[in-house]
Image 1 (tube, rainbow, N blue to C red):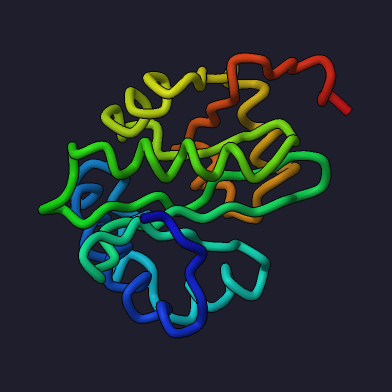
Image 2 (spheres, rainbow, N blue to C red):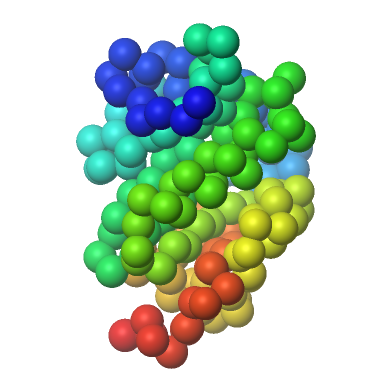
Length: 168
């Protein structure tokens, strides 16, 4: 079952993100890694910035989470994580499909450039990498992240994304 998470899920969201993010350790640049990967205050900041989390629940247990956030004229997919033991069961794909039904806006998402498995996952689900120039512009326009993270990230867009339509 997929459901919208609420305040009572905060600790579970925190646990899932930080457990699943361990896969990035040693993959992303060392200066971008921290323990925990997403501290509670950072997660609270994301929730306060209207990142709405949805969770995949099975037998009363939250197994995966994915956030959605409207920014200006697009929707961002944010913080997609599935418990390590539950990965490769289609949970991330189900969450992504559900979130796509919640908006009619163009959808963008960002991930680490060296997270090749994440890039492949999104490509499998109909997203494509934007050009490096477009990536820089989009990250600066729609995300609030440090320049170093912009350097080490990629942006993926839906197949019908038109760089020219949003090149403002």
